[in-house]
Amino acid sequence: FPSHDKLYLEKFDEYMSGEKKFNDFRNFMTLGFFLLEIPVRVQNYLKMKIKRGTENIEKLAKANNYLVINGDKMFFRWNNYKTKDKIGEKTYEVKDEKTKQLINKYLNDYHPDGKKKQAKKDFLLNESMNPINQPDFSNGLKSITQKLFDKSFSVNAIRHSFITQLLANDPSLEQKMEILNTMGQTYKPQRVDYYKKVDKNEDERDNQGMKKKKEDGEKV
Image (cartoon, rainbow, N blue to C red; front, side):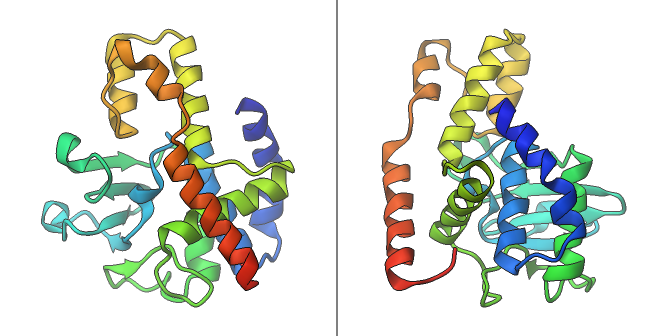
């Protein structure tokens, strides 16, 4: 997906400076979570609350994930995701400055409670200002990729492309383990083909959700 990264960045200034509809900007921002950062699963960003400050992070409700904002730094605290029972809770520091800029603009210009300092506000919302669910999240990503690249693709496709490129660069075993651990995977050399294989069940479920949205005339 290197070419898609480039096309995405070419649209960055337009989204940062222009007035976009709520869903359009949110979808662009969330796509950046997978193109600009290590691509985890969609579930990592569901049930996500806003937490300002790093106090008592270990005591936060395990049922939720968190965007932690501490000065100029941002972290994702993943407590609730697919492989949490094997890997445990994880704290991931947002690395790309453009990701931070997108999050700040979303909170300041689009999110109804984004400027408030109260903790535990829902981070990702739908157009009705309710917490976003997995079909809406996945369908929103397919919608924005279709708009930007004239072809929709899923998070699974991004993840598999990322892993293929990672392995092609021949990183050290330690680097492989660290990155795949962040992605919610456990590195096993004999399972390289597994990393590249499309998760048809997830993709088919997302496609069904997108089809239903279109039939109902709803926005994604």
